[in-house]
Image (cartoon, rainbow, N blue to C red; front, side, top):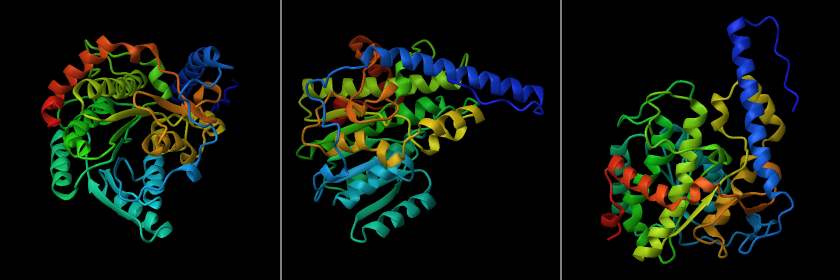
Length: 352
């Protein structure tokens, strides 16, 4: 991969920063190429979706209630819009009420009769998660699909949530873990409930730092993001195992959007943004794995859907590669127990 030239006129500290960013891009690409080489030329696995699946194949969603976190932009907005246009009653959950109103108005602009509303939710504040759960319990008969989509990516400085957790861990993973527990009673009232949790190709490089989940000792934006997305994937697979064991009737499915044009890239440096422009796909395309997982009759619990092109950056829909770390049932159970303690929730109680 040829890297963009770095202007000589930049101050030395800026030049050093851009060089470091360039190196990280190359290392990330090489790491992902190594995993792509293992999957090149693979045949369609049993249970793989139709690679040509599109919005035209999505069944009508009339009567279904869907909650989409982070539904004001990017993959979340495209998912919420498609579901609402297809007839679902959609609840967009996000922090910014103004952007929420804009998202609702944009969807009504395409489908005036769509049933869609905004509800405030800050996943980095467990009190907000609990309040959100109480409001939905009082206003909805059931929830057919919960799409755990919201996320932040690689803030350069370590942020801390309202509850004292590292911000990426709190927003991307722990908030969704607690939210799913809060909404489990409403999910169990649906006839065929699904929980769709978004991971990322970055999960392949992730490690769960059980000795320092909050990166309080040595914060690095990339590894913290990779950990949070690996945790999301581990959660999706563990939720299916526990649903099967406890009889919750939940289909827990994971998806990832490949590399898509969304607001997540806001913290990327100049070099990574330039490289990104060469490989990014539209957010509407990146939303297809999530929409398949949320709506397709053939979607299966415990599966991981995403693009199947080179490095899974983009390409036809299919089964995504599950990193070995995400298949470790012992580590997943350990993370689950720690997450219940950190989030102040218990799925066993929430399921009744």
